Image: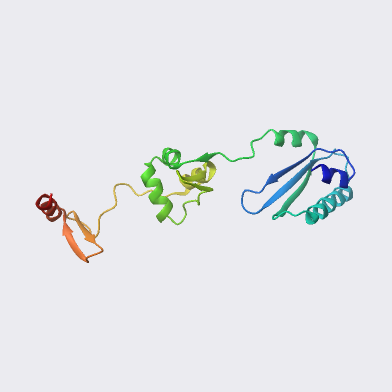
Length: 174
């Protein structure tokens, strides 16, 4: 950022932030309210020119010039979004962590995790909260296989087994 400040020949404060939705970043600088539109355009062109000369493996998403009060306020904000695990996502959704994992693997509108760690996926809290607002819940437990009577379909064998038959088999083998 010092090189950038030298290139545009001023002593402004600059910030560089990673774009959370892809391979990019944005640059923000503070300017007084007296800057003209032409001066702001020149500043942006200088910044983009500097970035293109750098060995970055990322794109410039945005170059912004803001008033000092806005710059300071934004600089005080955390740059990492609030993350939640399956446990916290379950608390937000009012379901178990197992149900969160099921929703994540089967529901087409469930948000993609921001990170996948060995301990499990992490989602942005706001994405889980947005899903919660859109999610149409169906009350009760899902019915098994072919419907009523406590029967379930064993997809590997192509047979329908009643709960009573399964219990008899379990007691005979166990």
